[in-house]
Length: 314
Image (cartoon, rainbow, N blue to C red; front, side, top):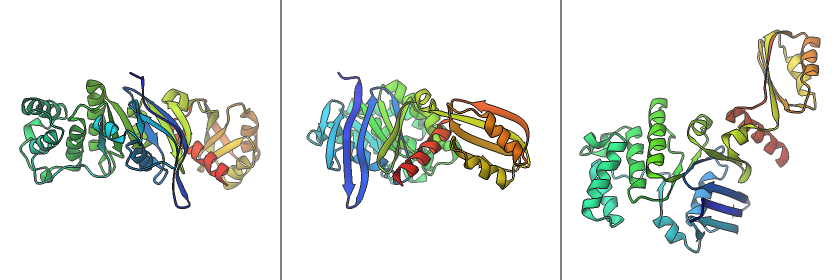
């Protein structure tokens, strides 16, 4: 069996004048949690629908679990689980009855079904509440049950579309912990879309960053964070607007965030920061401390790529 769970080449889909997915070439490895990152409207959900064969591509190739899509989309859907816009739960039913219903759809024999339901509900901490109607539960509990539903038939790959959207921070953290443990225990590949960069940094083995349908970067967090960028953090006083303007005018400077006592400067990694520090002083800034960082956080890389893509588009 291939070690690649998902592979696309020049995948393209348009809606009228809008190119929702633009020549997307992507690779997701088996057994990893892959984060597909981008702002709202960047093409994340459209990509999932193309991978599942729910939408037809205009151009390009798709292979999921060794099956060609859309030609073998039904086989792909048999071997995958999904949690998309809707949880797929029947709120008047109990947790156990929800899973039993889906187990019957998947034609899981009764004894195996009962064993699997107990196994999953225990793993997500819901076994003791299995007889309660789902409508009485919090959103976080419902999302845990929805993950159990997606994993019920032991799929090789699950698609999760913004699974923590609308959850409070405590519920989102609990959901991440459960997902990480489940993915490891089940040996399942996870394709996760999100615009929550903190979530991706804590959960994902590898990520792809997309905007306006174009893939801007792809790789492990370490690879993504080795972006060709140097970050300077300057602490001091009197960082007035003229200081910021002077920095922005420099060709090596990519981004500046300024307050009266704090400067964050992003520049090409090959640049010499000394002239910038001199420039700050010449324009009245009083420097107390300077910190230099080569490897950026995922958020810093993301913002840099968004800015570069906007410049490219214009």
